[in-house]
Length: 178
Length: 160
Image 1 (tube, chains in turn blue, yellow):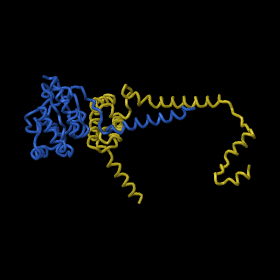
Image 2 (cartoon, one colour; image 1 turned 180 degrees about the vertical axis):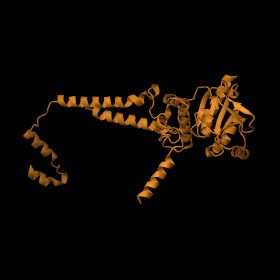
Image 3 (cartoon, helix red, strand yellow; image 1 turned 90 degrees about the horizontal axis):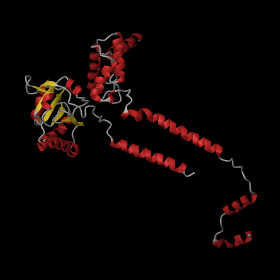
């Protein structure tokens, strides 16, 4: 007869553990379909000049970070300083993907807060954003020297995220690169 | 009054009508597909229901691809390649969604098993006849009487 007492307790304990695990998850962060896949093809003008273009092939050859941002995006401003810091600490160039923005707005934003990007691709209609599976800005991709997406941060980068995941990932990839 | 109501309703229909250049069967497919695709920002709405910019973009993609003659499967695959199975409200059966599909049936089976076990146990248990042992009953009732406290000696002596 003791099992009648034990079973409900065990079931409730299991439920508590499961629900507790659920609390640690972020339901707004979706697993990326593009992890460990080649970066989607794109061919866009740069923000600096319509005549200059940046393509997927330009991402190959070294580890890069691709940061999707827009001047209307508040969270992008929050992570701006950290993007600069990551680039300086790891030496990894950051390619900006300016998403559904105006040229004037984007340039003004860079002028006001500083430009952490090696180059900015200008995706005015957001087509490339959809090819990259961008749901909401900001999103940050780590692309290895083969042009394969190795890591992705959804939402603004936090200091914790930078120290625990992003910087170690970048350094590890750089180490295996050389 | 009725004319006004009709006008308001008509206005609502016109305002919600999608600006799509599809007709007939293609338009029906457009609506069906939109209802099956999940908006990624507003998560608990389909792209048909949502007015988020991304949902608008995805609706435009669905429209364009239907007009270009792509099949429903191809359009879904196009979006799954970019956003994962997550965009589908009807997720496919694979290793990642196995729990989702099998879980309810496993739970149902466990529940049935428990019910069957309990019923069997109850049936096999001997029906205990109510035993009325008068002597024992009397003894039990005696025990339940409050014990006399120490400074209440007189009453206890009287009773015994």
